[in-house]
Amino acid sequence: MSPTSAIPLKFSLSELAGSLGDFGTIIPLIIAVGLVSDVNTRYVLLFFGIWFILTGIYYRLPIPLEPMKAIAVIVIAGGISSGEIAAAGLILGVIFLVLGYGRFFEVINHWVPESVIRGIQLGLALLLFKASADFVIKDPFFFVIGIMIIIGFVVLFRYRRVPDLSSLCVIGVGLLGGLYLYGIPPLSFIPAPQLVIPLPSDFSSAITTLVLPQVVLTIANAILATSLLTKDLFAVDIPPKKFSTSIGLMNLTSVPFGGFPMCHGAGGLAGQHRYGARTGGANIYAGLIFLFLALFFSSPQVLSIIAIGVLGALLVFVGIEMARYGFRTDSLAITCIIGIVALLSSMTIAFLFGMVLAYLFAWIKKNRDQNKQ
Image (cartoon, rainbow, N blue to C red; front, side):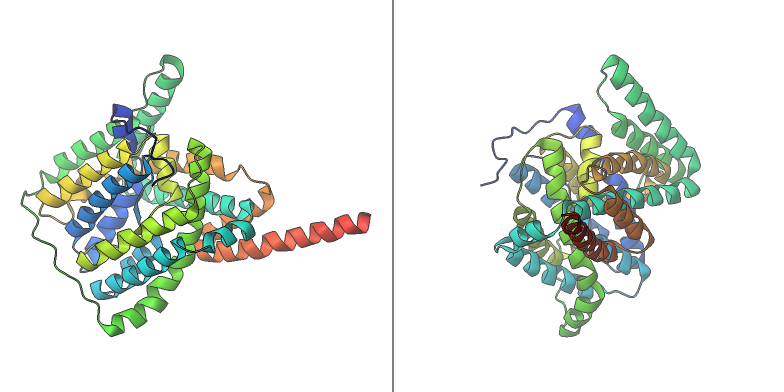
């Protein structure tokens, strides 16, 4: 049974607005993967839709789903086949399913300092700002419009208590702009998914190329940071092993049929909460949107009709929300250093460097205290 099973699902306009809060991260990654690889975007959307609904029902909170970022970035860089992607998803599915049933995360929680997890959150905020800057360069007009809409709703909420429906309005403006520029995408029904069977060589190359870079990122951001942020936002303690188990299940059941490796994410949780999501109803809304796109639109780039400037505007305020919680740390110096390292290198390097730094600082402090005595 879920530790949040008593929380009622709500389907208000605020939940609908919140359901769009992570689209600024999900949509660009799915579009880019579909453009450069032989992955069928419709099946990616299909399984995102299914699992958004299932996680909303199970967790009863807006626990998000995102493409596994390290894998997505490597695929976007080129040269990765659908067989290798499927192999990576299966391997990661087994790893996180097994970890979810052991005591691994109890040990991790004991030995990983909070300042390191907060540093990962801050690093993610900085990466969101960086991604937003890319959108500004490509589409400054709609970016400015999106920023103005969001600020307008912030003011209305503060002084008139008007619900924050800014994400609905921002996505709506971006969609109308895209339809005006590119027209309505063709309509057709999705064919039945086909089984993707990786070759033995796909497994060996996937381990070194895709799995190893993703494992640390998933543990740090998708599991530990998401668990901590859930406690910050909802005062609910969902054990990290629960998130590990659901990540394992979603990948084992989706990737063999054309889905893309996916996980939870602290940035997505901050985004959905920032724009109004408070229950799993937001996840169900998001799932229905993805299912609609997957089932009825033939173009794998159907999401690209949304003017990307508005996605950048959404990311700015998600980054601000993420940074707020990143600064709730017991060591501001360590957290800031980890955030900067994450921005300049990678989440994996930042996590490992942060662990060394945190224990080094603790050792120095202990010796200093002993010398004073």
